[in-house]
Length: 590
Image (cartoon, rainbow, N blue to C red; front, side, top):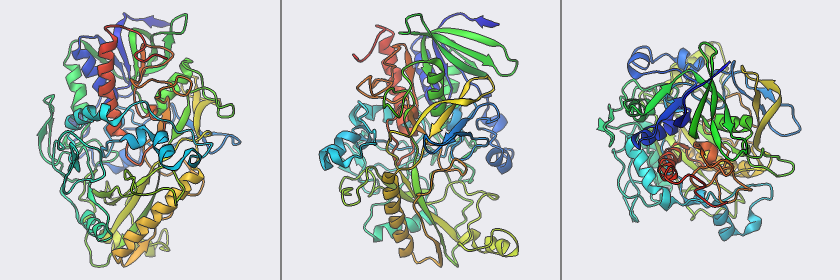
């Protein structure tokens, strides 16, 4: 039996960065907000403190902070002719399942996406002509500009304690920063992290080749910091336990130490953990949503939570799944090219080289999530001409370390036996003396890369799993080969003793090894309701009191990590909702 609860102004589904920001902002605006999070409440004091947090088996091997695939997962295939099979263990990406979401276990890399992404189709057609874009590449402009989003990037960076060096302040190029970045209003809230030997060596090599290295901007506080809301950060300890772990020093920008505690102090806000939302409810004409149904996963009790506004703020994949399960918007059909829900799923590509130097001691266990130097010469730089290489998109290249752990980090030269005495000897010899150079590349939307509901497999509630159809296309193969060559050129210029050269990802994509937790698309934003699920304010074209926030709104994926625009969009949408409540209805005419 479903228990119907008292209506609230806003129900928030998922409590990570987006849910936390929106909950805080809307509760402060006087709205009654209830947040439903399927995971448990965790805290630094009880869960992420030394020595318990430094448990590689618990957090890396057993995925303590991640989604439980025994209860809910996805099915995966490379193309529509294949039968999709369930992902039984997490691998390629790691959705979070605690209060704070994936922002508890992220590394902190925080980038500003620019008009190179927001106006992607217009930019490429203007520079290279319409025929440069492959017919099956379904990229589109986003309907928003960098100038509109810049103040919200700034707000998120100052909330999340981002450390970095500006490269462009109000149009003036700044020494030491990224010369290719779009103009920002002011400097980062904190100076860059202390460079490590690997990043210093990469910086020197990149400069010698004429590139423009800069410290990677990251939400790892380089020193103690109090953000504009009064949330306090400790300084990064360079402990080496960042990605997949909560931060023991409260130095990593995470919503569970910032926006969520502030929201919880507000009497207008209520958090219900262990609450799994199974459906968004619609009224009889399907033009408004009326609330959600959810189950308490601890005791199986079912509830209906009516609300004037519904905000989907779960992990990107789960937001799309809930839209499909709820029958909101037309599901995407890759054959007919119709519909929008499930359209334009994208991931990332890349390439990496491992360099070995006899006589060097890198101390790889001393690092932060952002301990990398980066070049954007082949990324947000239109002086890099794509025409001779015939690909759409971009990549950045970096050198350094990020969470190289005692069990998982075992750099050995290619050709080393995979076990036994020789492997042990190589591990002992090369552990201290290896570093990595890697490229992270964008993935452009393609007609056949998408989500839909699986016809065979179901989750713990008897609902169809979501089916992911994805593979890299020739566009990504071309870019990957170019990136691998640049990585190898930089690596060889450093004269390593041994080198495991970078290679492009041209084999069929597989969900098994970890690659990045950067899944985008499925409920994309845009200017045309026929080609997008949401308008520029992330408001549903179909139900005006439904807003969907997260990387699922991105029409394609960039080389950058998505958290910067995700956080900025959360603040952008919060302001839009504050206007919406004064005059409910579509914020953009269809």
